[in-house]
Amino acid sequence: MTFDLRSLLDAHTADGAELHTRYLNPQLPRTLRTIGFDRTYVRGEGAYLFDADGHAYADFLSGFGVFAAGRSHPVIKQALADALEMDFAAWTQFDCPPIQGLLAERLLAKAPGLERVFFCNSGTEAVESALKFARHATGKGRILYTRHGFHGLTTGSLSVNGAEEFKAGFGPLLPGAQIPLGDLGALAAELRRGDVAALIVEPVQGHGVMMTPAGFLPAAKELLHQHGALLICDEVQVGLGRTGRFFSYDWDGDVRPDIVTVAKALSGGYVPVGAMLTTDKIYSSVYSSMDKLMKHSTTFKGGPLAMAAGLAALAVIDDEHLVENAERRGQELMGALRGLQAKHDLIQDVRGKGLIIGLEFGRPSGLKARANWAMLQKARVGLFAQMVVVALFQRHRILTQVSGDHMEVIKLIPPLMIGDTEVKLFTESFAEVIEDASKGSGLMWDFGRTLVKQAIKS
Image (cartoon, rainbow, N blue to C red; front, side, top):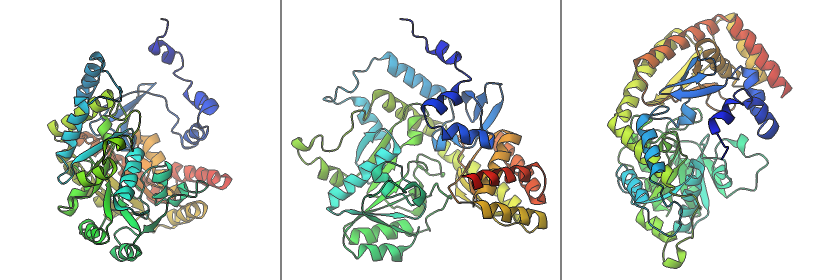
């Protein structure tokens, strides 16, 4: 056998952009070049990425929330090495591997009121499962969702996507309706039509980092149940400790949703895995008899490597007190950032829970900065936030992201294991970038003009 993975990749270290341009999505390398993000990363460790030149980048994106435990965690790596060594009889399709039951048991121990798990391969598959089970259990067809909510991009998930820019050209989609986040009146009005199966909601939205108002989730569940409908909480990004609670709905009292979806951090950063948690009553409405055994399924559900990664990830979250660390470090970050907000009117809002933090920008008062702000807004809302993201990356090697299309918000979702060093690095770097932006002149605004030109072309 002549295959040698390391040699193959070493021979093509610098070819990633060319290969993507030729065979994958050509817009990715094009975008990365435009904003100066065209780096070749060769490894990751903890809260950092390292490029081919040996430079370290603080990862405040964490793969869209995947790396709760940080990158290359030794416990998770060892669990996967052990799983490979054990040569599991994987995916026989007609057996009951204990490893699946063990991960289900540990997940359900964190979710009082829920009793069954369906494993799948991603967050969007978990959402698809939730939608199917809700419609089957209630006998109703419509799913309600919230403005700016994001639940995935497969067809069912896309149907309940509150970011309308993703939907163009993919209809017709499943029947449903969008309501404003936290609007009980709008929820009640839709429920009175009598055909609603469920409301799906992120207790803390990834797009824009918006939070459900206190008391909304228990009140919504009560309304839903009065009309024979269900509450689905999407915890794909914010679950497993990110907000300083294991599930983000735990911030709103003893809610106990009917269905919960998880993924991302459950992977340990290695093997994609998703899960839908629900009650025995809902679950059994689908799997009601032996001939219904395969009524909802997927070939790769519950693979041994994914289950091993999930078990190890949950162990690390508990053993290293990552939920508590997320709450503590989030408070430190938001405290420092709110201090900067008091000094700079460019920072309109600092909000979040734990280690999902949104920084929203608004029009500055300085004459030069205000004129440049108007230029960016006229070309495309969101360009200022992108300018901040690029400055943090190019000047300070900090990786962040804009929180959604047409939003002047950047989102911080670092690994849950960050410490004093990363909190200080981000706050000091962000302070320098905002101080420069407030002046209304310099290299940062020059780059802003480049973004305007790109926006006009597209």
